[in-house]
Length: 171
Image (cartoon, rainbow, N blue to C red; front, side, top):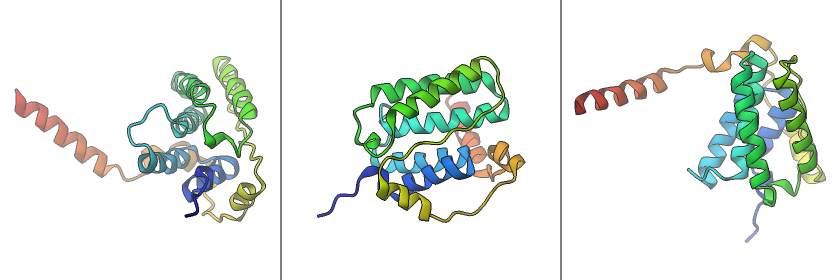
């Protein structure tokens, strides 16, 4: 049986493509959250959660939510440190990830203008997979910045209403 390296999974490849090429950090979060739920549901101390937090932080920073960006980048850096020995980092430049996230955190703390960075891929096969992946170009900045507010939220709102009703019914 052939075991696929975890960074060669299509969802992780898509994450790398989105992070490095489109800077669609909301989509990065969504794709990785799906992957994380497949491989390690509810396991908070997992390398995928470090990448999810990093993407969330970049999304907040670009939107101007500096407190949210700082908080999530701090969590991301801590999670990267906690999981540094994971196989997820065998195909990526871990030291560069740490340097970029730390530098970004310092820029956020100085309320500097948003500055994207790329995740350096050190495995040639993974690099090729990322380069070959074709994704829909979503380069409209307004869409990328406000994506969470522009998507269909009816399912989320419905679940919140059900949860509120359950709490109200208890009283």
